[in-house]
Length: 254
Image 1 (cartoon, rainbow, N blue to C red):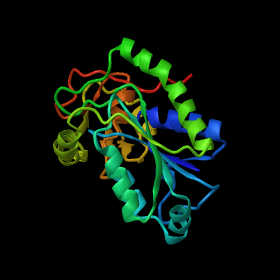
Image 2 (tube, rainbow, N blue to C red):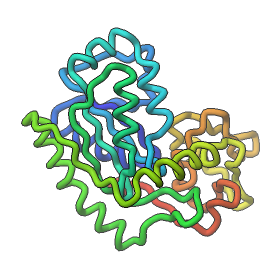
Image 3 (spheres, helix red, strand yellow):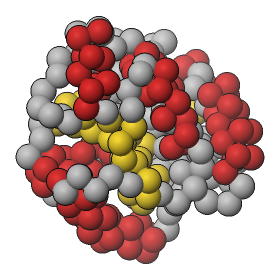
Image 4 (tube, helix red, strand yellow):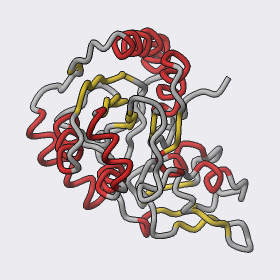
């Protein structure tokens, strides 16, 4: 089984393609409550984005809340992890391995897949140019095929790009993101909002509701996946002043 978390579509695309190649079933993490999660098949693959050189806090919480029946199977079979990232993982691989170890789940293999950047919440962070975006999208299928072949052959590896200064980036920037980048009250809709409701529909956490005048409001379950920001056709969704003038990206649907 392949369980994924995705905000802008990168991890969903990788998980879906991987499932086709490995004949596994794919499940959105947000629709798989850990206390009720059932085990399907003979392997567990987790697909998730890298957030500021770390893992989405939501994923760590999901692993910690898994029920004993699921855990008993996962401890026997182990877990494989695929991280989607813009350029590098930092110490996200070590973070997810520790989260699994705390649950008693061995990590079998871990790969990264380079995808277009979508992180825009901190100064100096923006989406890729269209040229770089197209290049990354043209390359990722071959990488997923490589990972699928290795999994099917039982050739598990640790194959990822940590990048420069991973301890510094993950040790300083990631905690800053958790503290300042996941604050529901900072999300807002400017006067450019036309009330189309796309932000409400894309939110994986079902955390956005439209008021009577069709103005979006964010609840307390926000994980700053950025889906609402990137899907807005008027660039009206903003995270305080942090996202002003920044670009947008969603995995293209064909």
